[in-house]
Image (cartoon, rainbow over all chains, first blue to last red; front, side, top):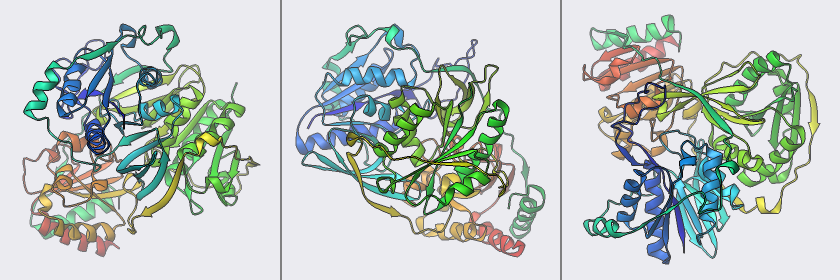
Length: 257
Length: 327
């Protein structure tokens, strides 16, 4: 079974966000990590390979530093990595990213495409599902459990207030949610091996595409930071009095209960 | 050319979800600014009765697609139907709730249409050229981006609890149109075998008006009943921090934060939660925040509107009693 994992590098979730002098998100000095939800995708891909054999290919898009996350995933055990790098892809929107990934993925054999259900940076949660549509294959979002047999997958996915069991024909795109598995740590041997592996680089031209084919559908007008919340009132006194006072405030002053 | 603002209504068992009512209410305000008709689109089975209800919340026109194949939501069938309707009617904006359905359907539909989409928005307004612009949290709410589409239609999902629900007006009438479900066979490759809904009577976390969350300070799974009693007294949902989930005390679906649910309730009560930046990202847009924590230095107090420094095991039962007295 051949598996493609779409991987994104994101800011560490600990990162404090600041804007630079041009009003853009400043990445200077920020620790970059593999998108936490993509770790579940990598782990699930490796589990599938252990069971059925085949290849796990990573596909990512972005700058040179993305190689760090790709090496981490290779060290976890993935077989190959492709990095799409092009000056025209400086700030792609979700449609552009999906179109480019679709072109790249269509040149690799795949039975299942896995990706995190959302990236913790832009929080869009669009690209993997768009990719499925661009490839004209089904997608199941937010999966918690996966069983495959006979060219089909039985997938449990999270819905509001519960779960849903879905049978889907393969190939398909599945997006991974926390709870699916516990991602492994790279082994020392894996890290050594990953260092030697080649990361294949592709430009838009390599994919037979040009910037003119890829006009953004969405524009970002500006970024801003939330006005910081301030700590309010501390209610002191004996526990019983404090609880009584809090209930009174919430009812009478804040009017929220 | 004003061709309409469309709201994709989410319903189950003849009930319309609150987020859809929010979107109708806010959609009405937007439609009045541009003269666009406000159109409610309902897909499902036995949904005719819902037309009157969406009309009361401001829809000028209701499109019903009533078909057995649409009984349960599936990505493919819903995309297939909506893609055709949108291409035919050319609305300028299509709005959905940022729910499990909206998060799954909107990106697929946007790609099928070849258009842009704004995810999980917490604000929308028209610019000078009558293009809808959206405010959306990024980096888990640590920053915001103001985005606009370069062409119409634009799709967007809106975070629940963003807009107030208007009072319904039973006299407001809408034109009701029934459309056939045209579903391409290649959109029927995923089948829902089973739906398992939690038995809980508590409100859905992402839509709840009040949430009481417990963190590391809960000390163990057995103590969540204290939190639950308090939640049930005021009809609140129960949440958790990552620490409590990772400790295995409570299921992952209750996790609030950057790698969990993003919530925006009227009242968020954080119990035994220190206030890590990732947790704050998931609940920072709550209208009122209350913190109960033993540690007076806990970061959560830096943003809580009201705080009690003390033992949650002592305070929560007392608070439950006080809520009971208030009735």
